Image (cartoon, rainbow, N blue to C red; front, side):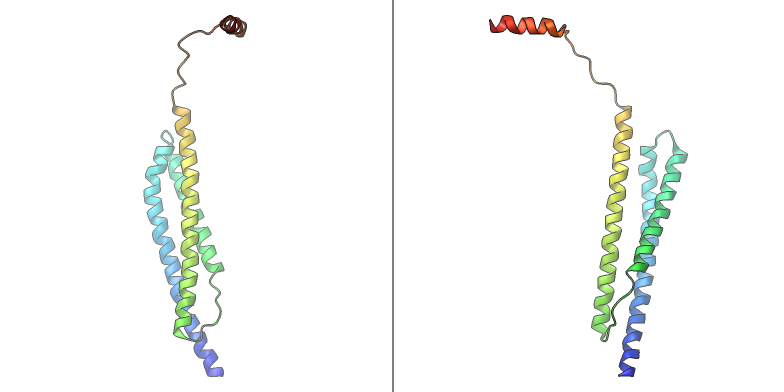
Length: 150
């Protein structure tokens, strides 16, 4: 019995090691990719403020690291795995949860950046076209309406 517990614990240690390696590697790869591609997007959003675009990009990457590595650590705990199949299932479940959270965080960031960009482009738009004809005062319109009805 004791040998079985030690053996199942060793499988779980392998699961933890594989999970930690994958979680850290994936987070670093995604952060680098988002940093490089996000820089282009943020320069477009903050056209006249290149320094601000760079600062926002670095802050987003730091937040990405903190959120994802913290979440990866929180969901690391797993039930004991007696067989290799159970160990693989535990690993797949943990990686799936991590990937879903990474995707959700990414889409949330993209939504926020879209909103920022939309607001900045709306501020740069030309004012609406002025009316082409003068309708006069409200009283004149009311009189012309009354004449048309009468």
